[in-house]
Image 1 (cartoon, one colour):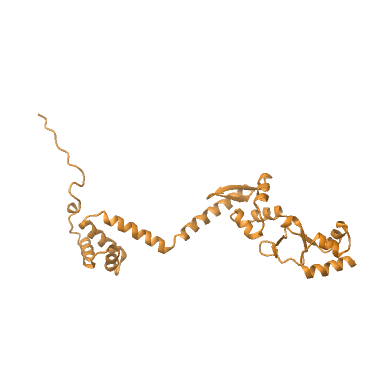
Image 2 (cartoon, rainbow, N blue to C red; image 1 turned 30 degrees about the horizontal axis):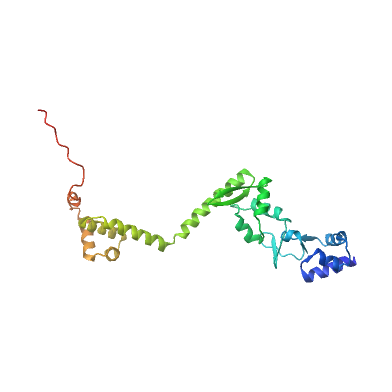
Amino acid sequence: MYSSNTLLRYMNEKKIATMNELTDLLKTRSRMTVFRNLKKLNYISSCSHKGKYYSLNDIAEYNEYGVWLYESVTFSKYGTAKKTLTFLIDNSSKGYVASELYSILKIKVEDVLLELVKGRSVIRKKMSGKYVYYSKAPNLSRKQELTRKDRLQSLDTEKMSPDVLMNELKAALIIFFSTLNEKQRRFYAGFESLKAGRGGDKLIAELLDLNTKTVARGRMELLSEKMNIDTIREKGGGRKQIKKKSLT
């Protein structure tokens, strides 16, 4: 009992300790003696540093992932790194890549993940050039994969900010505009002004480097419905005429 109380006071003060520190504390060379006293206190061992560090469940402050990070040491309420990674993957909505798991556990996970894949505890698939780890349960892994794909598509859209999209659209519009003849440019500018609505003449004029009156004229011509379609085509445009062959 004395040893357990000594151990409890020490752990409450230091939070974590190695086996060497604990054997020195209890003045024993027997690891079994230390473990016997640790067991009475509901001890935990680190899932980092090859389980080198020990603490108590009552001391651990687990986060939402069931992980406690103390200084450079990682503890998990699920035990070993293997058990922790399996639990996290099985309970993820979209699986994990190695970098995401590292950000949670702060330990190198690649080797452990490979062992889990070889042992068929989890599965992995490549997506966007990275391995994604999913639950071994077929229905759940499929759902995780679909969720991750949807999320990646959403992220791609988010990366294209409104400003970027608008600049790309402007550049494409200007390139297209440069391929038109004078009359086609006026009509096209008028059409874009109609789409833009109020203030469209000024907006399109600034965008295409035109006179506002030119844009307004194109818009009014479109609305008048009196424009000659044939005169819009360049000479030589349209379907070639078919010459009738003489029967004689």
